[in-house]
Image (tube, rainbow, N blue to C red; front, side, top):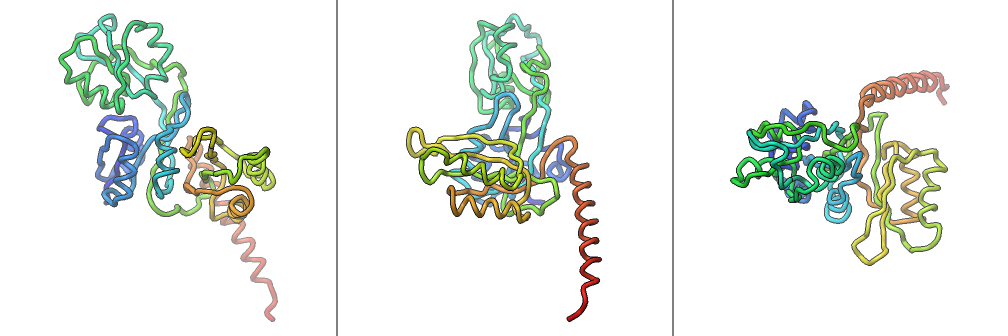
Length: 307
């Protein structure tokens, strides 16, 4: 099977999330340091798909992922995967928490543990790493004493580190959402989400409202809206919008058609299956409802008299 690139190195939360997907876990995995580099590998055809983080329930969106997809790539989102995050503090065997003078981690991961660091390690300095796995690897091979890494148990085990503290995130219900990126649009499942980026044609009062009214008029539920700089000038923003539904649905297609024609420039980032604990049940229910409705319509049409 074609290889899948993931945000590496080995032992990241991205790899942990990838391994929850049976079909992806069966493929050869290629660890690549840096979200833009994962996307570039797929763009270049070195890997068929990429697996990258896009959002955290505490820290919000991963801006480098949004920006790369919006401004530097034509890849589309294929699916999303939610992973409950178990954050811990790890160090070389024999190290005590009182010995720690320096903490290494991916900045977004460290930011999820501010309260713990402030309370337990107020004097420790922080060093940014490209990923939690890289932080664990650096601590494992460093000769410097007093170092610890914030990350996941997978990376700690991989690099032979001991646990100094478990579940150190500020909020217990900590989750990160990952996405698969590739080419093409997945078939609708009945429980899907679409992501777009809207660029205002003109900065005028009511321009955002005009976009949102198109969704409201069709009772399309928005699940996320976020502004990001367009990289053109100060104060110039675009809007990332997630909403329920699939491009194959006429209501969704009509909404996007109207926005593109009358309101804003639109970049389409994909329609894909929704993640979540009840996603499979909802997809099965949607599929059954569609089949029942299709049979009903087919039965009615069979009764139409021949001309």
